[in-house]
Amino acid sequence: MSTLVMCLIICALTIAGFIWGRWSMATVSMCSFILFILTGCVDANTALGNFGNTNGIMLMSMFVVAAGFRRTQFVNMVANSVNQMAKGNIIKVMAAYILVTVVLSQFIQSPVVVFGIMSPMMAATCTNMNISPSKVMYPLGVAAIATCSAFPVGSGATVFAELNTYLESVGYVTYQVGLTDPMKARLPLVIVCVIYCIFFAMKFTPDKPLVEIGEAKTGGRQQATLKPFQERCGYIIFIAVTVCLILQPQISKLVAPVLGFGIATWQICFIGAILTVITGVLTPKEATDAMPVWMYLLLVGSLTMGNALQATGAGKVIGDALANTVGGLGNQYLIGLVFFLVPFILTQFMQNRTVMQVFIPIAALACQSMNANPVGVIILVQAACLSAFMTPMATPAVPQYMAAGGYNLASTLKQSIIPCILFCFVSVFWTMTIFPM
Image (cartoon, rainbow, N blue to C red; front, side, top):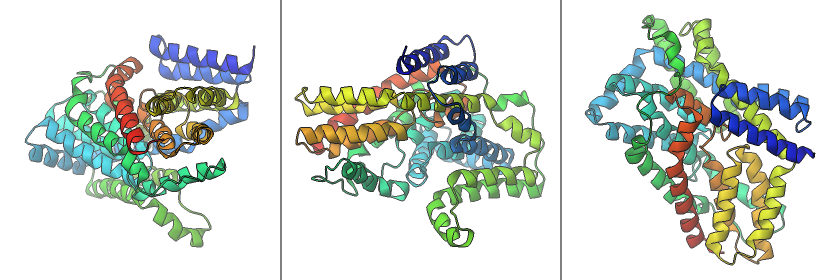
């Protein structure tokens, strides 16, 4: 049996294990982790390297920083202010949080960080309004994921250049992506996402957690009020980390001549986590308790699955078959649908960057063979890869919002059906209309 077939079988068994729910997702994830190694689907050193993945370090660090922020009275003041302005109206509360999330997502190219910034205040607001976090964490997470880098500001300003690089890599430079083209294509998706997350998503979220929420470890005990110094440190660290993350490219360029290297996003989060403990905002035990180990193990297993799919060439096989198929469809909307759906599905199991590296060149080559304009198609591939929010393998932000909202996989999949259909239809119809082939 080839490693490709073995890889696909293990992937199928892993997904079945997640859905079955007999064992925890972390247990299933670690079972697939070792199976991928034993069957030769992925190199052992590559798989073990995932334990030190910067996304995992950033994710755990943000949990510590956010837990420190939650200990302060400042977060309660913010929650009270939001509640007073909204006059207890949950729709107005959601509108405030979702819109701020969308804005942050344009400057911080990491849904993990954006959600980590917004979720403590959202959780405090839920407590203040006596609402279960399960009602609101899913739409907050989806907004952070699906709207990331949609506008040509911050990290989104480089998207057009990246897409043009893909076109140059395959030698198809007849067409070029403009600075505002990705925004023009993704704007309706952003609008639909905002409307859905504010007005409709809560109709399909569970009324109470289906699994234990991270903060439940305290058993409902009231934590001691911080001393004035730690109180100030708690919100200063959180605000400083947020500002540094927004300005990370500028800060990195500023310190590079002095240090000889820049400052990465994960390093900012990690420094914030260390300062949270050093200043006494959290004790070492509280910081450790704030980091959900199950989520970290799930992330490691998910990254290993992506490694295996890449190493065995599964993505390339699917991409080549796709390129051979689309030429005979004869309808640009059907072609656009295929190039959105297939990467969207694959990104639920592989890292979005990997899927883009495989499918954008394939989409460009397919358009070149038809002497067609590839701009709309390659933007669709990118939009599909950046909109993956159905499974914990899609992006670390998914297990993050699952932990914050107390969702299991079945609940997450159920909540994702309607937004997935909406985002797909809107993206394909609009993009292929304004960027015809």
